[in-house]
Length: 203
Image (tube, rainbow, N blue to C red; front, side, top):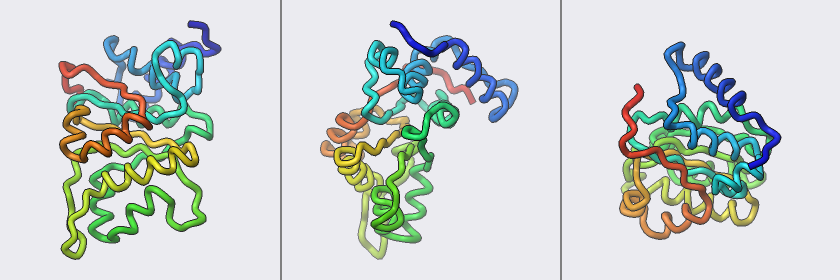
């Protein structure tokens, strides 16, 4: 697996960033190194390493694992890595659900097609999928994140815009919560990177 990047050096640099952002006790666990390397290879656009690790650079990332395993933290640190095409914004699904209560269906448009029809599409990471609830807007119930994911799939196909998601849910739990159509779209547009279910809460 030849690469132009020095991964031990990059991971040490990210760990240093983590200590600065999250406190001196922050450190990477040895068991998490495979996932960290996969994430780094993706955001570095390192074709050789990503291919060897089974990562498709044309797709986004679905980062799954139990509560407290470090998904949100790792995704936050990855914002230091990418070149412009892979830069992304993080938005929690709970915050999006509260925006929906306030602004209604405009929110679905906001996270799929931008604030207006001429807006530039953005790469987003939707953090903690599954923590939001089905919400009602003027009496109409809407699975907000399901609608956003379906819309994001369309711009992934047409414009190659990336979506990333973190979730405590397994693939089958995502299907139960959002339906088979959403799970099918996620499979086509995201690389699955999963922490072991036995990973202890690091918080």
